[in-house]
Amino acid sequence: MSKIHNDFTALMGIPTPVVAAPMAGASGGALAAQTSAAGAFGFVGAGYLTSSRIQEELSLARAQLCLSDTDPLPVGVGYLAWQLEKDPSSAAGLLNVSLSNRVQAIWLAFGNSIGRWIEHVRSYDASSGRKQKTLIFVQVSSVKEALTAIQDWKVDVLVAQGSESGGHGYSAAPPLLTLVPSILAVLPKDGPPLLAAGGLSTGGHVASLLALGVSGVVLGTRFLMTKESFYNEVQKKVLVMANANATVRTTAFDRARGTLDWPEGVDGRAIYNKTVKDVDDGVDLEIVRDNFNRATQNRDPDQMLVWAGTGVGLVTEIQTAQAVVRELHADMMERLTFLSTLIAT
Ligand SMILES: Cc1cc2nc3c(=O)[nH]c(=O)nc-3n(C[C@H](O)[C@H](O)[C@H](O)COP(=O)(O)O)c2cc1C
Image 1 (cartoon, protein in one colour):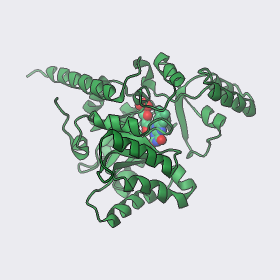
Image 2: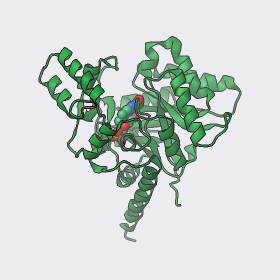
Image 3: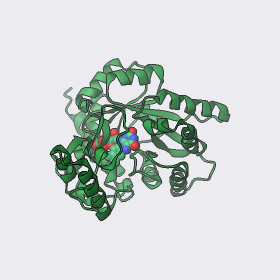
Image 4: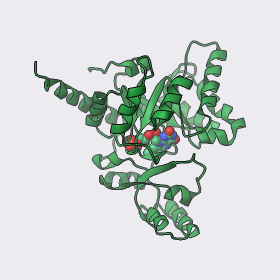
C-alpha cells in the first residue's frame, strides 16, 4: 500500500494522514484502537469521563491492539480543558491515567488554562524517566489562538477547527478554506504540523486539504457513523438519513441539557430538530428541558441531540472504523494521483 509521507505521518508513524477526533460521549477505546489499527490515528474522548472510565476505555484499546500492560499505546486521549478547570484538584488524576498508560498523544481544547495542562503533561514526562514524549495536540479556531499554541505552548500538532465542524466549536470560527491559509501564513517553517477539522467526510476532502497545505485532517462526524462509536442506533439512523442542509450551529442543546459552562463564544453544530425550533421560538426553557429529557429517554429522533458537521449528508452507511480508514485512504490516493495528471510538462 502506498503511504503519505510528510511531517505529520512521520511524527505519528502512520501511513494515512487522518485522525479520528476525540468526541465526548461518542469515541471510546474501540473506535480509537480500530482507527489506529487501520493506519490512521484514533482518540478517546475523555470529555465527561471519570478516571476509572478513562482507564476502562484505554484497557479496551490495549486489548484490541493486542498490547501488553507496559507497551506504549498508539492512541490519544482528548480532554475538554474547561472540565479540567472546573475541579483542578482532580485534573491531575484525569490526565495521569492517560499518561501512565503511555498514550501517544493528549489533545486539549476549549478552556482558559490550556497552558497549565500542557505543563502538567511535560512535567510528568520529564519526571517519569522514560524516553517517550507525549505529543500535545491543541485545537484552535483563530490565528490568535494558533500563535499562542505555536509560540507560547510549542504544541506538537496544531488542529484548525472550521465552522463546518460537528459538535462544539467557536461560533466565530471562519470556514476551513479561510482559516487554514490564514494559519499557514503565520506558521513558521519549523512549526508544528497543521491539521484541518470540520465538515470533512471523504477521501476527496482529505486530498483537497492536503493540496491546500495541511499535513493531515481530523474527522469527527464520519467516525460517529461507525459500528464502534457510542452513538445509539437511532442517532446513527438520523445521521445516515441527514442531507447536506440538515445541520445548524446552536446553543439550544446545551440550554436544554444544562451544560452551559463552556467558554464564552462556544456553540455546537447538530442536526436541526424540534428542540432547536422550540428554543428559537422562545418556548419556556423548563418545557424545552422536560421535552428534551423525555425525548432522550424515549430516543425520539425529532427532539434528541445528534451532533453533526456539514459533511454528514455525504455519508449514507454505518461502517467499521477500519473500513472508513481504508476507504478514505484509497479515495485520497486516487484524487491525489488524478491531480498529478493535470500538470502539463
Ligand atoms: C459528537 C462530537 C463530540 C465532540 N467532542 C469533542 C471533544 O470532546 N473535544 C474536542 O476538542 N472536540 C470535540 N468535537 C469536535 C471534534 O474535535 C472535531 O473538531 C469535529 O468533529 C470536526 O468536524 P466534523 O465532525 O464535521 O468532522 C466533537 C465533535 C463531535 C461530532
